[in-house]
Structure formats: structure tokens, C-alpha cells
Length: 56
Length: 456
Image 1 (cartoon, chains in turn purple, brown):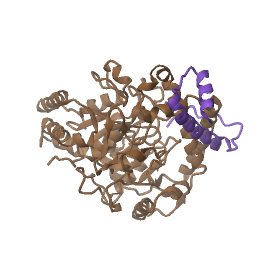
Image 2 (image 1 turned 60 degrees about the horizontal axis):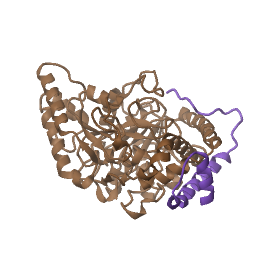
Image 3 (image 1 turned 60 degrees about the vertical axis):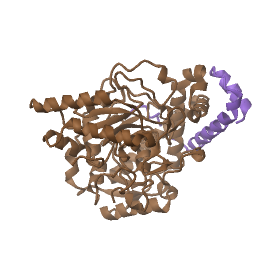
Image 4 (image 1 turned 180 degrees about the horizontal axis):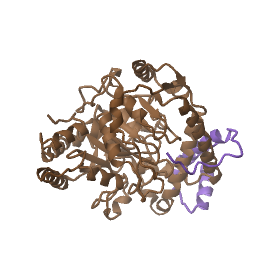
């Protein structure tokens, strides 16, 4: 993830990210996407629904 | 004698028995705040006149033979994420400071007041609860009462510091990924993340709707239980709140641990923790006769999924403000929230699906045991200052991604009061974790004032 990626993605959600913040945002987004990969690497059964609801 | 170490139930008992007056108790708390909070910076608002007036009202009711409630005269304070009628809910931010005062109390605040507790003020926190340090750029850092060069933890850092510093015996906090558990551990006080859906979040600014919990921090387990009993229960103002009435916890505390199946959480938690944290858990396990070890599967993925879900929900909640007032966010949160808005929706849903899978595995584990012991945090409280961008490595609480209750109980016998680390997680809606905390040898209130040590 680089600053160009951040600028392009931000435009799609209506955000303007100040130039001085783009490097840090790119770094945080890379961290989040690394977490996404850790989750996606796990072979979930197709039948697993999202955990929308919990009742104690 | 009511002092900076007296627990909430003991204060209420003294007030109700006429051994002291609510006004004296509240005035004592206000005096300690005046003396110590310039250093600690736990409070962002102190409601001196209103608190004294409320205390007088409690005393008048007692004098008239009325019952003012089980927490009569107990001073408490709430993280400034909670609505307090007449006070602007800062949520640790500059942006929300521009909003009008709240028109009614958050449900948890209202229920503590209805139980006779007296609201003293609002407490510092990480901006929008998105942090683990309470080094708030707008309102200054909260300092750890055990060592003021160190952080209090977060995001309920003001809540933990106010209890640890002896300013109040009881505080309200919120916990999304550890925001009660972590500061309770780093400051050496007791904290409870209840089962999800047990305590209403109505009137509390959200961080991540599907993870946010409201819970108490206190000087002992009895204080946690008394507060939980006051605030738990159905609330139509919170759609995630269970309609099932909870069992009372205070009644369970004297039952001991006979029949409770207690095990040690291994795997992920054992690998991450420092030797001193593991030694503390080992001592607790030995005292409780717990020898069996249980490893929850894929805990590192649960941590990752919690990170993704929290970011997805927090980014969505703050998107409008990020579009118009990004410069007004705390730099500690702004860039992380901006990054959070860029996450693909498929990643969020995948994490919620993994959460369902993980929740089922945790439920399987809790069919074999009632209580799991683990370090709340793997490290002591880090120093305040430039190394604060450490990625929350000090924050690795058990109980992420699953809805089970987690109690943090201090382990002040670590040879340092800079922070202490033990947690007990229990089956959802089960009181075993609190029972276990109460049953530990030497379970007594943590001492404030930066000295004196915590309970063994």
C-alpha cells in the first residue's frame, strides 16, 4: 500500500487525505490488510453465517 | 473509617447503617480529587455542587426512613463517553466538545444513580475509545497512580486511574477490545467486561457496535458485583441488550468455588506473556487447584478479525466527521480511522463470519470448563511519551471476539505496582468468573495513592 493507493481509495469514499497524513494512513491500511489476510487464510466452511446476533 | 481504600459495598453499608453520611463520603472524594487529580488528570469534569446536593438528598431520604438503594452514598465517575444530563459528552474529542449538553443520562449512569450512587464527574479517555493509552492530545495524558511516569492504559484510562488513585471507589468504563481490562490491569484495579448484551450501551458513544460493552471498575470483586447488579438488565434503548434478566452476582460471591471447573488458557496467551505475568497466573492457578490447560484455537486470527471488525465499524461511524473535520481529530486516532474507512466490505463480512466460527469453538471449550485463567496484559505499564506508538503490544487481553465475561483481578505481588495482570474469563452469562475472583486468597481492595501495594 502506498500513498497513491490511499489517495485513489479515499476519493472513492469522498475523503481528502492531507498529503502529510498519506504515508501514515498507508502504513495503517497495510496493517489492517495484513490482518485481513490472516483472517482470509483460514478455510471457513461455506455454511458459516456472519455473527450478527448473540443472546446470552 | 471510610478512606481512599474502602470498597463500594462497604461505603454503602456504612451510609445505610448511619455510621457516616453520604455528604461526608462525597466530600472526602472531592477533597482527594482536588489533591491528586492535578497530577493524575483522570477527570475532565468534576460535578462538585451537584454531587454534594445528591449526597444531601441521600442523607435526607435515610433520615426520613426511606431506602435510597444498595449503593447509597457511593461516589462514582463515568468515562466521558457516557451521556450525563447537562454535560457535553466529549468522547475524548475536540469535535464532540462543540455539541450541546446531553439531555438525559446514559442508562448505566441512571441505574447507578437510582441505586443511590452519587455521580462525581466525567473521566478522561482515548479519543472515541480508539486506543490503549489515554494519552489524549486534547485533554492531556492520564497518569498511572502506581507510577506517574507510566501510562494508565486505555481507553478507559481515567476510570482505572480514578479508582487506583483512591479518588472514587467505583467508575464506569467501556470495553470494545480490552478498554476496561487493559487499564484495570495496568493500574492494578478490578475490572469487569460483562457478557455482551448484559449491560445497556444506551447513551454511550459507540466505537464498534458489535463489540462495545459497558462495565465497572472497582476496588474489589464485591464492588464489581454490586455495580453489575445495579446496571445490568434489559433496556429497550439498546437493541443489542438481552431481554433476559441476569442473575444477581452479589449473591454468588459467598458461594466459593466448589464445583467450578477452572483451567489455564494456554497457547496464544502463554506464548505472548512475559515470565512475571505467567508466574502470577501460575500462582493463582495453584491457589485454585487449577492444573488443566485449555488452548483456544486460532486465537491469533481472532485478534486479527477483531481488529478488522473494529476498524470497519469505527471507520463507518466517523466517516462523516472525517470528511469535514479530519484536522480536529486527535492525531493518535485520525490516521487509523482514515485507514479504517478504506477497508473493503468483503473483509469486514469475512471477519464477522470467522467470528461466528470462533465463537462456536469458545462455546465448545466452555462446555468443559467454567472459568479460564490468563494474563490480562502480557507486559507492565509502558512509559508515557514518545514510544506510545507501540501498536498496543501491552494490550493483549483474553476475551476478544467472543461474548464471554472477563474479570481482571490485580496481582500486586509481582514485585512492582506498575501494573498487574490476571484475568478470568467465564462462560457467557455465567457468574463463575466473579466467584473465582472473590475466592482468591487475600482478595481485598487495591490501595490507592501510589503506594501500599495491591492485593496479593
